[in-house]
Image 1 (cartoon, rainbow, N blue to C red):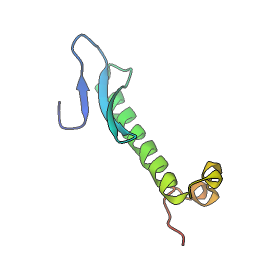
Image 2: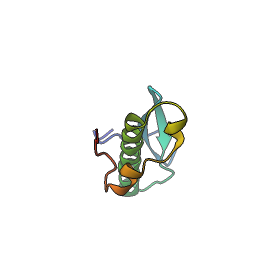
Image 3: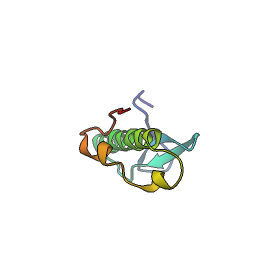
Image 4: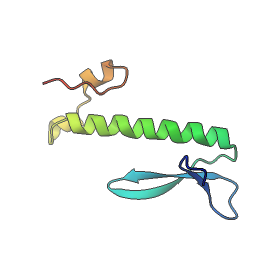
Length: 83
């Protein structure tokens, strides 16, 4: 491991990274043998996870939580606190 979150599993040509889902760590395959592509995929997955976490934090529990948050969609990053 190079300190960037990517690693290889023995006898596998692919790069892997760890992602926290529902409070548990999970190993995810990048399905690529290219180190640079794997870094790009991991960065995108972490950004996507951050956006989802932001949306979950903003939405109320219940039936309204299933509605898309129009305020978040309009923002470039999606995380603008409005009270």
